[in-house]
Image 1 (cartoon, rainbow, N blue to C red):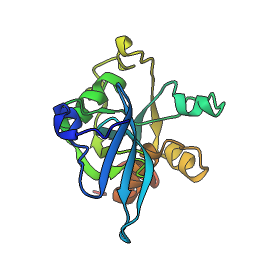
Image 2 (tube, rainbow, N blue to C red):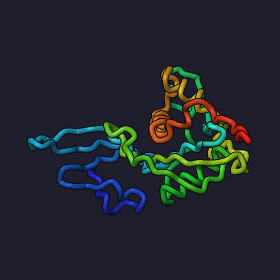
Image 3 (cartoon, rainbow, N blue to C red):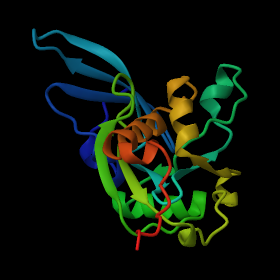
Image 4 (cartoon, rainbow, N blue to C red):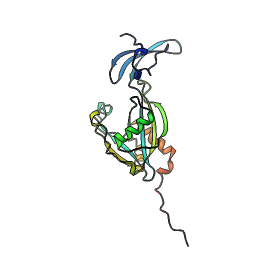
Length: 215
């Protein structure tokens, strides 16, 4: 297998940079690229590591501060099925950038998957999803919404094989899922914890109804 000169690859693949400390031998190229990367350690030794590449992604956790809930989706995932786990994991809307900006991707995926039109995004982090074996970097956002913003059916795109269940989850139930170790999708767990850290007020007792002032 020859070393691939990444300078000759398409624009969507040039974010895999070949340097004196990194070279890639491609094994398979399709929607994903799989290969063996040779990396050079600080002491000068060269070692091989497996690499999967499919670009960058964006994910967003829509939250309704007034009604104290979030929007999540569930769908079949090949990873859990590999382990014989049939549970449909609760997840935040997410998708690959495909040439779009992270902000545009988050807004588009939220509408396609959860049926909600987002206007404002709150950046959380731009992080590596699994740096030991994948090049994927994912932009994570929080985003406020109201019930009036739920103008679509959601559920994903049928022609992409998506059949999602959309659900609103109360922040009380979200906190319980986290504390019981039942929020098992990593990006969703990170965003749920970010919301809890940034807006702890939303996870406390419900809003107190106003009462008339004494005359």
